[in-house]
Amino acid sequence: MTTLEQKSKLLSRWLRHRPDAIGLEIDKRGWVDVAELLVKSAGAGIALTQDELMQIVAESDKQRFSLSEDRMRIRAAQGHSVDVDLKLPVKTPPPVLFHGTVQTFMASIRRQGLLPGTRRDVHLSATKQTAEEVGARRGMPVVLLVETFPLLRDGYQFRCSDNGVWLLPNVPPKYIRFP
Ligand code: HQG
Image 1 (cartoon, rainbow, N blue to C red):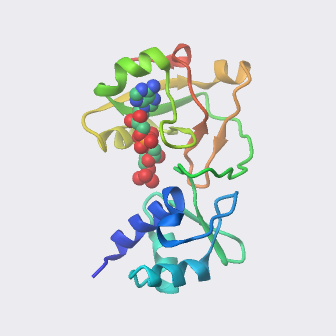
Image 2: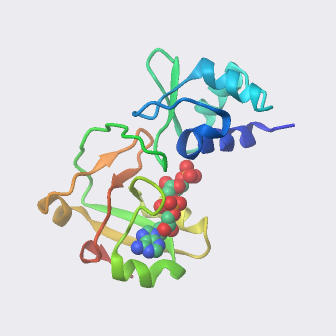
């Protein structure tokens, strides 16, 4: 049996990285039709009911999914590797943001700054604690501080996902305060 947590993980995978895995059509804003999602997931052997989907959306610890106003469409709030543009509005960030990572990546980050890797954006957290949790997914967390004013002054545009993750295309090393 597939648990709700497993279904939530599958949903992240389909909506962020592999809509093609179950033949889902994703539009350029990242939206997928809810009815189509239910049919296609059943076709792939994952029974997902409308109620379960709504429960996953409501209970996702990080509020990973957003529903359209009419609740007919769903998308991942952030974290995509597929080519989408969520058209999130540009927003003024707080003075300091945080990035959680691990020691293994530090030499490379010192050299190249923060790069999005396979995702569309670099993810920054509003609190040190969240950044620690993000880093801890990979091992002993290292938290980097990013002062946002110099980036704003130099023309960088910040966007904030529906679930409060700050997104930037990249952060060169000169803007990062290393521990
Ligand atoms: C690192 C989770 C080498 C970066 C979290 C990170 C987040 C570099 C890894 C969301 C680098 C990328 C995203 C460079 C960055 N050289 N390594 N130049 N620049 N890195 O998973 O930020 O649970 O793509 O430090 O809560 O860890 O999935 O990004 O360690 O919000 O909803 O490369 O994923 O949310 O890893 O995490 P990721 P992330 P979910």
